[in-house]
Image (cartoon, rainbow, N blue to C red; front, top):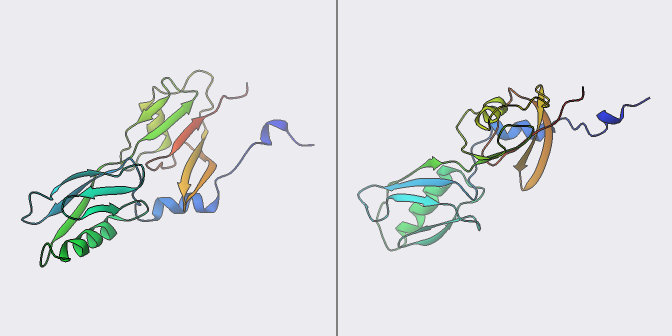
Length: 173
């Protein structure tokens, strides 16, 4: 005999937790700080647009979606070497991560700023905490990994990543 309430249970796929241990990949909504040594006109903060690009003076659009900060540094340096600077020294860092989204049985569902090391529990606290009807033991998280959306059920002490959508279900009494 199976329980109807368990039919929708989806444990997190193995690839789901792999994303936490991989280097951070940029995507739309991230903001990065590019520093080009002795080039104040290029040193600035750049947002990754919906198409996945940043627009840098002199060199134009640079693809950023799915790239690490080190890859962005290398690509910007390579483009600057082509007729603009002899030996550019480029550094990139995250200025602001893309937001997370919290839905379901929380005080104030919505979009919230991501903080490195954030857990589902901390995200729920930022969203006003659990409602009295909330299931407080685990949550569903939807995360993009290798171009596909994965949804899995995790305990509230699991880490979240930028762009994650956290759904707090209603508990059964």
